[in-house]
Image (cartoon, rainbow, N blue to C red):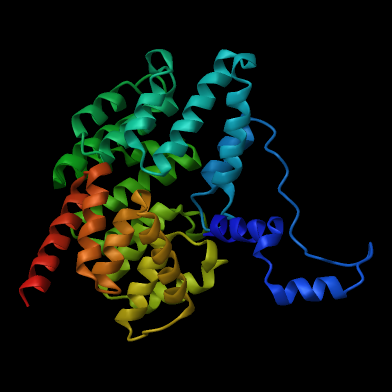
Length: 356
C-alpha cells in the first residue's frame, strides 16, 4: 500500500497538469523565494551496499518491525546488480539469482522463480534447494518438493533437511505419524541456530494446528519470543486463538504489537478484522485499512494476494462472486491443500447464494 501512496504523491509533484485552477492561481499570486517550502518528504533510504544487507533486509520484511519498503529496496538492488552482472564473481551471481527468485516467489510467480533458479548449475545453493522445495509445496508438488529437500542433506544442518522432508510429506497428506516423526527430532534443536529453531517450531506448530490441537500449537510457538515471530508464524498463532475463540487476545495483542496498520501484512489484518467482527465490532481503523487494501487488490486482480482477497469476501464482507473469482485466480498459482479447501468453500458459497 505504501507504494501506491508514494507513487500518487510523486506523480502529483511532477505533473503540473494535475494542479487545479484554484491552486494554480494561488501559486501565481504568491511571490516565491528560496525560503518558500513547496513540499516536504522523508529522505530516501541509503542504497543497499551488498548482498549480505540485501538478504538480511528481505528476511526482515517478514516481521512486524518491517518498514514496508524492504522489497522495493531489494528490487532496486537486484536491478543494479543485474545491470552489472558480468562483473560479478560466481558466488555473487548465484546469490543474485536466489534473491531474484525470492522476489518472484513473494508475488506468487512460482513457475518463473523455478525457471530462474535453473541458472544455478546443479542447484548447488542450499538456499535455492529450500526455495525450490517451498515453491513446489505451494504448487501442490509434494513429491518434487521432497526431492529438493533430500538434496539438502550434507549441504545444511540435519534439522533443516529433515524438517523440510517431513513438511513436504505432510503437505500432501496431514498424518499424525508425520507430526510425531518430526517431534522426535526436537532433541537436535539445542545445537541449531536461532533461525533454524524458529522455523522448526513454526512448522511443528502449523502441523499441530492442522491436526486439531490449537493449544499445543500455541505452546510450540511460545518457544520463540512473540516479537521475534515472523508473519507466517503469527498467522498460525492467530488461527490457533481463533479456533479457541480467543478473539479478544488476538485484537489486544495485535493492537499492542503492530507498529503501523498502514504497512501491516494483509493476512494479519484479515485475522485481526475477523476477530473484531467475532466480538461485534463492525467498524474500526483496521477494517477500514483492510477494505482499502482489498479494493486496490480487486482493481489490480492481484494474484499474489488472491487467497486473502477470496477469504475477505467469504468471511468479512460477503461477496461470493468475488470470493470465487479470486479463489480461482489463487488456484492458478497455488495448489496446496489449503488452496483447494478455499476454492471448494468459495464454490459452495457462490452456489448457495445463486440458488437463493
